Image 1 (cartoon, rainbow, N blue to C red):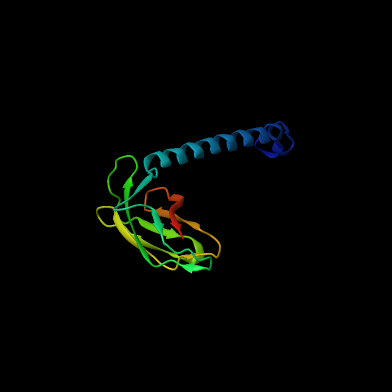
Image 2: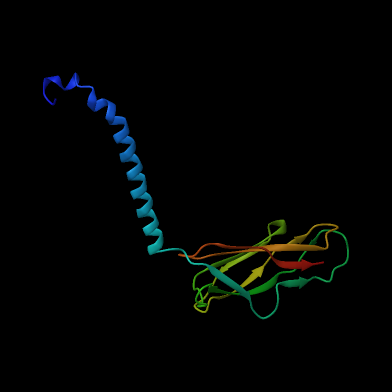
Length: 153
């Protein structure tokens, strides 16, 4: 079979495609198991935030209907590990919204940061706008909070 007559023996060719399919299926299963184990060794954790010294609601006290640029204001946020409650150092907190306004800042060793939000505009004939908040940190899932901050005209 392996000498000069191996080209004439068709039995090996009939079983070859099935063997290749089995090898590919087994290889994919092994690769999936390895990828799952890697994820179990170092999974990303979840983040949690809280607003400090105040609220996530700001009032401008302006009643006219023209476009209005909100004065700069400070948002104080604490970022913690959602499971343990321990502060997360070095997390980047970003606040963004209307008119390209917003800002970002990293957290300190207590997981705290103060973000000065700038250039937020309230469009004409709109009384309320909402800003979004995003927190990123190494080894953590990104936390996105839509409508995290409300600004009222």
